[in-house]
Image (cartoon, rainbow, N blue to C red; front, side, top):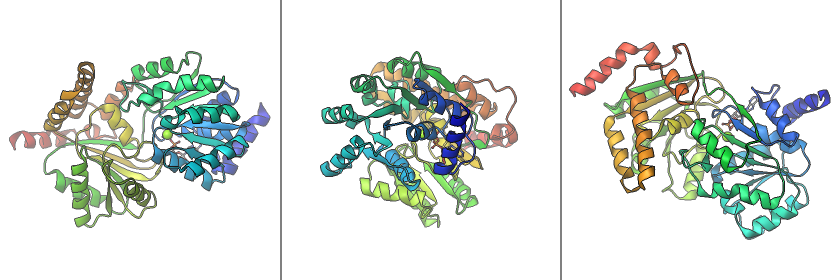
Length: 413
Ligand code: ADP
Ligand code: MG
């Protein structure tokens, strides 16, 4: 209704400080408010969080948000608290007493959004508690974690549907930035959401510039590149922890405020480094792919893949962390076939089907890197979208000649 439209918009302004909905946000929000199952497929940075955060504020009771990473939960809860929203989380970082406090406040109806780790959700005591609370709906963020075909499979995610059923008949909103049709189907099937309204938006990120360079004098190239973006926020992805440490050090000795981030670091160090990046005490975070899922730093100006990534999907997710504010975002990937071979070797110990799948993903990556076709056209094609024209905003469109020269150089080296 018109009144509802007005009140949603005023809530958007009042709580989040935004004057307009983006894309299909408003339709999605209305759909979930009406109690319908909702499936949202939108690229990273499109503004998916708001699609469950706003309805949670409008509806009675507490919305459950299932989210795969503790860092991600903390990031969102901190942000919501800063907006004056009562959001809390339930995960393994809380003490027994803190956990009880959260539960008590939820049952009393004070908590509008409760973020829960899938591991916590499956616990008997969590279930008992959720059955006592008044739940408005369940949001499943990063829903691609359900699919073994996705790049970030979490077995616990496959139990979510069964758990929701024991809590009650609740509307579900599932959200993902991963658009491969296969993963989509898998999500919908596993969540038994055949009836869901599907909101799928284009994956084109018009403000991101895509570039691939051969791995040749890579350190020197990286330093030059980072210096060109001096003082700006950037992420440099590496494949191993060792490499992360090495490159962070390399940047530091070159006067770049860089910090490492990988799963081998102490949780407290990891958190501190992430915070330093978010607060701009550090300009560059050098990280394994453990960093960044759901991290909301709107002004990341460059994303470098120092090593060739394992899949186009992962690569696209990671580059998607650049330019979330809609302004400039530069995506540079270094490519070598040696990297592909190295990654193939890592697959050796995997079960056969998984190995074949990983190999296919790697071959697609290699083909993308080698291709002279418009990058955007290739990427969008990968996600089942047709992009007719060349984008004129990638290396292949703007510098076709230089690229070939650079490749020749590598062949001769
Ligand atoms: P996603 O989960 O889709 O990757 P987020 O929910 O993290 O994206 O949102 C990305 C950025 O867009 C955030 O900084 C968020 O505050 C901003 N944003 C979301 N909706 C709007 C809006 N309607 N107007 C302006 N900014 C928005
Ligand atoms: Mg998100």
